[in-house]
Each structure stands twice: as structure tokens, then as C-alpha cells.
Image 1 (cartoon, rainbow over the protein chains, first blue to last red):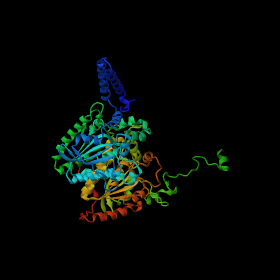
Image 2 (image 1 turned 180 degrees about the horizontal axis):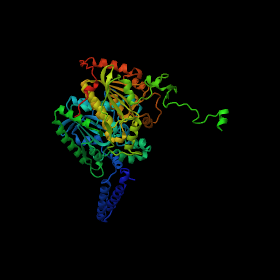
Image 3 (image 1 turned 120 degrees about the vertical axis):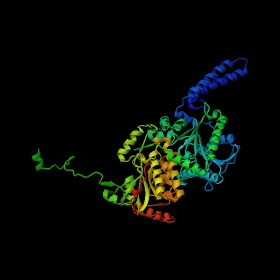
Image 4 (image 1 turned 90 degrees about the horizontal axis):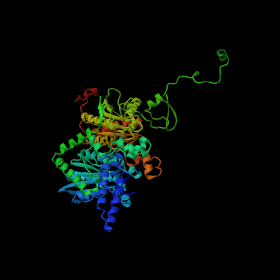
Length: 319
Length: 302
């Protein structure tokens, strides 16, 4: 099995392997295999279209955690002209699962905060698999307040399985760290735009996710609990994650329908890692457009609109 | 055989013989020290075991009754009911779970909010109903809490919330998660307006409620021995793969780690919060005491 392909992508992987093989053979001798290669290529494109045209929520969930998926710092490189990473919460430590600092974005000065995962094993451990401890959220809080002080709009990229559930995290007040950010973000007197670029894992994601606009990449997910976690609690069987993913409604299209997301940023067939530059441009265009709108609003109106947005969350009936 | 039974009463007692009628629920066994306690007396003791001071669960209505002054009270947003926006279904339909929980608790959802008085001072008090789907926070809980907060700001009255919850309600998906943002947003506004919020964390308070309104009190109070945390102990054990120390995530641990301000015995809760509020609000100009029923300030329907 090709390791950089997900289970449901295996038919594509097989065709790609055949094409590569033919290309290799073709370059070695005079045989003209172009026709055959072209035939396989179009067959593969069709396969990609059929698979990606009808992804299940569980498949999207796998895609949102794809090992090749661009992470926050990959987009930072592509979108910002300048970025100065600032470290530490000034109280306990520097959390490597959250990165942030001032940046230049298409001429504007902004504050950036993002959740960062690691690519290889060593980096994964360094980034704690993208799971923040309280000091990560408190570093973010420090940067948020700094952004407000210097009137820099705040841009956040969300990509985390969730806040880290560990002994130390509990001792240092994981709950309080998340709660504090929610409260502060709701009143931060600067425009805030939050974009889910991969996994939006529950409270850990929301802790940098309260803003004036919330966007999702097409194949990202945003959920109150991971499908696996939900399955093990409600179905008493983690293997029912596929059912849970469907029931929870974690995909961008579903959340757009529920009015919980403002904009879905399209990804190419196969996912963001197929065309990272193109996706980065799409994100940047979206952010620029939204900033243009938000920066025109007087602070008071901005905050009132944000408050009304928060109040509008929910589905209930009144008898 | 009846003449024989009269002559020689059987020494073997059979079911339904001369069993005395004991009304159900008259006796309660303490979960901690196993003492068998007379229910009316236990209730007079606010459901705290008189033998070992174990704080037993209290349902939301009883909680508010024990906390607020007797007399006129007005419930906030009592007409809100949950809907199944996602058509969620696991082994049971969410819809059916709602109906079963409503039948079991007699409540429409997991939060009750009430305007009343504490030692004569007008307050807004909320309490989670743990019996309703584990006191989980969905859209109704979030909306009720928000309206209670707006009401507290309108009346310029302090707000108190008693949490007892497993966290966000999974069956409402991301809508539930957003209630964390919503409730925290309302509390942020209250803080800016100088309306005090006292968060009372009772057993258990975990997950999305702990990581939002629960930890945002101007003063955070815990009842003795309550489990309070972000992640549940089982999840942490699975992550770190070791046994957790005794008392981990209990009130006393949180006090030690600086997450709560104080641990207060339920029987002193009214007095303690009353005194705190009196101090917290004394720096501001006093509002005219109406002396009238809280009812006359009911908001007009929009």
C-alpha cells in the first residue's frame, strides 16, 4: 500500500504506480507508450473525480488529517511576506503546538496565531501532535492582547485534534486557559478571522476560533468531539467512528448549511496537498476580501456584530 | 386450612404477608459512608450527609430552592425546548433521548434559570440539571444561560451558576461547541459592565462547560470533593497510560493548584455568596431598593 495515500485513495494510487512504471520503461527504450500512458492518465482522472465527488464525512475526516496536508507554517510561508515568531506565555513555557507573531500580509501588518502539527515522527513529538497545553493558549492570549494594543487584525489558522488531555495540562488549568480565550476574543477590539485548515478539534480549536468570520477549507472538519471519541462514548465502540462522523455533521458543506461557517474555501480534487500554492492563494484572497470589509467597520459596530453573532448560535424552539 | 393457620401461625413470612407499607424514597443511603439517612432530615441538611459531610447530588430546582430566599421567584426562558437539528442518531435517536430525559426529570432541558433574591438582594441564579443527559450543554442550555446573563445586566443584578455537567452535548454537534463561545461572550460583556458572576462548581463539572462559563467566575467556588476538570479521568488515563493520583481533579486539588478561589460547604453557600456579593457590589452606586416583587420587572415580549 502506498503510504501517502489514504485507504479510499488506493485505486488512484495503483493507477499512478502503473503510470510511473510505464514512464520509466518508456524512457529506457524506444517503445512508444504515450498512448497507453494517456489512457491510464484519463482513467485515473476519472477515478479521482468519482472518488472525490462523493466523499463520506469519515473520508473527509481522514483527508483533514492527511500526512501530506499543508500545516499552518506551510501557509505562513506562502501567504505572508514577513513573519516573526514570538515564543512563550511569560509564565511557564513555550508551547510548540501553537505558533504566532506579527506578520506582513499583502502590505498589511497583522497578528497571526496558528496551530502547528509535525510532519515526521520527531517533529510530531516536538509539536505534541498539534495538541496544546494551557501555556499554548496563554501564549495565544498574550498575542491577542498585543494585537489589540497595536491595532493589528488577528488571523488564526485552526488545526488540532484537541487540547492536550494530560496531568500537567489539568494542573495548570487547561479549562481556564480555553475559557479565558473565548471571553477575551469575544471582546477583542480588532477584526478577527479564523480559518480551519485541517482538524477543528473541539474546545482546543475554539480557543483560537472566536471571531468576526469563520472559514473552513473544503476538506477540513470542525467538531465538538472527534468521531472516534464520540463513537466510543455513544456507540461504546471506537470502530463506529464512520457512523459518528456522519451523525456529528463535521464537514464544511454541512456546517455552512447550519450557518456556523461563513465561507468554504475550495480545495483541488485530491485535497490541499495536491496544489498547496493554489490553496494558499485562495486562502489569502478570502482573508484579504474579509479584512477589507471588517476594517471599514467602526470598532463598536464590529464588536456588537460579533456579540450578536455569538448570541445567534444555537437551534431551539420557543413555545 | 385457614382455621389451622389461625391456630398455628406460620413462622415463615411470605411475600405480601403482613409487610408494612414503607413509602418509597423515605430512606437514603450515603454513597460515601453508607449511613442510612432519613430523607426529610437529609433534605433539611441540604442533602449533605450529617455523618460524613458527603455532598450528595441535588437536582436543579432543589438547588435553586435551597439557595434563593423563599418567596417570589421568576423563571427565565422556561419556554425553551431542544430540537434535533442534526437528526442525530446513535444506538438511540436524540429525539427519543430528549423525550426520555424530559420524562425522567420533568425539565425541558439541562439548565434552570431563576430571578430571585439572596438575603434580600436581587440575583439571577442558574443550575444545571445533571439528570438531563448528564447536564450536557446544547443550544437550549447556551441560550438560557445567555438570556439569564442579559437579564442580569438589565437588572444590574449579580449572577450565580451552579454547574453539574459532563460538558458539551455531542448530539448537537458543533452547535453545542459554539455554546461555549456564546456563554463566554455574554460573561465577557457582564465583566465589562461590572456585573458580578459567581461560578459554583459542583460534582461533576468537566469538558466544555468547565472550559467556558465554569472557569469564568469573578469568584470560582467548588463544593467539597467535586470532580472538576477539562478532560475526564478516563481519557487522561488512556493518554498518559498511568494510574492517576488519588484526589486528582477534585476540589481540594483545584484549590491547591489555584483554579478555584475557595471550597464552600453547601450549608454555608448562601451566607458565603451573600457576603461576597455584598462586598463586590459595595464599590458601585447602590440601586434603589424597590422592595417590590421581582415579577414587576418581567421583560416585555419583543
